[in-house]
Length: 460
Image (cartoon, rainbow, N blue to C red; front, side, top):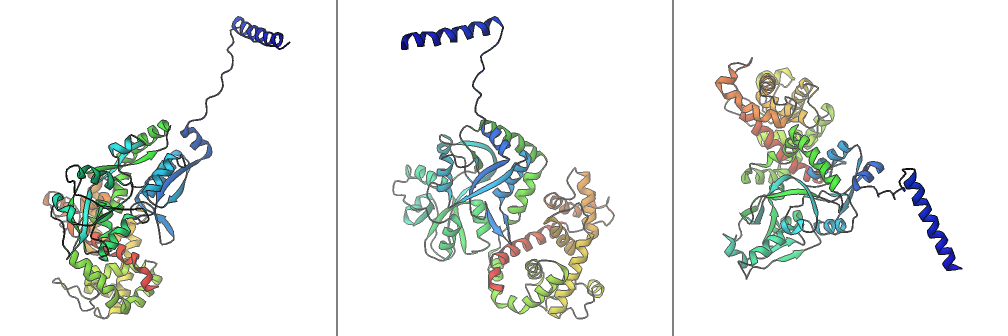
């Protein structure tokens, strides 16, 4: 009976095929499973793996920020989906989670290396870094690669640093290091600063940010060429990779990538150890006396007190009797004309100077064009405080001539220095200006502001 039944089923199948052939129909194919990109678009959710660090993802003043966080959020907006962040405990966990398919993209400051490319699917490069040996100023520091075996070196497990040191060990057999799996690179740098360990290997962007908080950190030398950072894309996500590539080309062409890099990294280019160290000391010796007035001015004029304090430090190093060769005086370095304009009778009175400087800064903010948005409004107002609003307007005019965006600080700061060149300033309404000065001015204030925000718990 089973044989007859099977033969009957077989004849039925043959008949179905014959009928389909006769009428020109095809047997329906089993639908293919959706691609990773299709699934993301259907769910309207992009799962992003990352970890907490100063270059990736962290909370700042009740909101989440970070270069990686902002970059991948912009990509999610391009797709029309929501970025959902899964924050893990470091690079090792991010890579493990990626191998297990727990995320769509890993945006975690990951270096593209030959070894990693054998395991993971990488998207396009968006930033370059260099691995650096970092020790503490005042202690013994290695002079070259051959000197490294004489030092205790700590690095993050499963990092690109580990790969590089393994390569170097082939040339320097005595080279050894300690692997750490329970703390980020930033914490290792802090332990160097606290003299708990001798040296670490870290990416240049992480070092640049953290030297502001730990000024005794010293770069011995780089141990790699420049290396690209890139996102890792989930296995089978070739379509998603192509989408990232197309988006990044447009994002870069529209100068959004340059703007993001500028926001997080460009102002870190110059490091003044003495001034940064002095600032750290005066956080406890000078600032407490001035803090009530800074907070009062901040509340009245809706400006972050941390920014006002950072600006005041740049102006006078919190010295109420400060005086410049051009005659500006006091904590906020007001001219006689500006002091009169904002109702300051005694420029050497610290409280009057702070309130007057804040009022003037507030007036400048209101004069910044509405098309200038976000933090750029603050940088524009600071630049105007330094060089004058008229010259800022001239720089905007010149930016348009060069095809730059007059509403973006990362573009305007490249134009301002041209105001000192005759071929440009003679074509502008306000003429000559030392245009490099406001660029440095804003850069320094941003450095102090970052340090102060990192220490804000001391003053709450």
